[in-house]
Image (cartoon, rainbow, N blue to C red; front, top):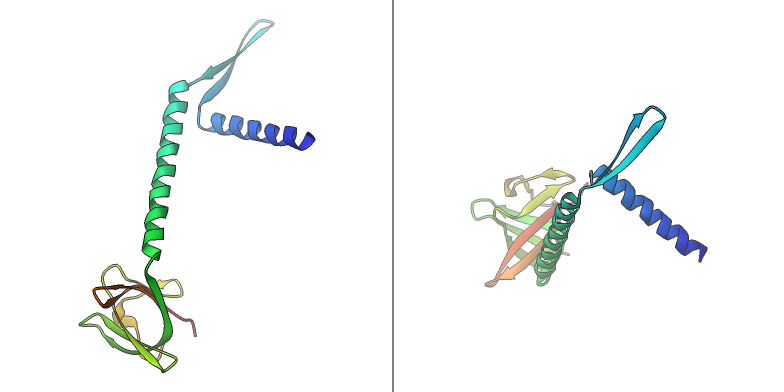
Length: 151
């Protein structure tokens, strides 16, 4: 029972601090002689507007998460060495354990990185070890990301 009261108290303090920070309410003080008046002003419209905006952001995040889940479906990964790069055709040949070669195409939305540096397909070199995440579309392997392993 004591833990429940503590949790409720922490939540109440957090909501109170958030509301004060977001100007949902203000406390003002006036004094005349020996009298001190303390006023609590609550801005219901601001609370309604902010909570509506928060709900909209949560909905957007939910839609984004659903899109990401759909994008993950059908993804494949190949880890291996770059055998060749044809920058003019935006194609990279990757050998998996020297047994299987996978041709992947890049496009303007392919994310190519080495450490935190963003690269272009022209920056890829034969014999570099890469991890490629791709999807198959119309029989073609379209690279979504290519990550160059650090040496």
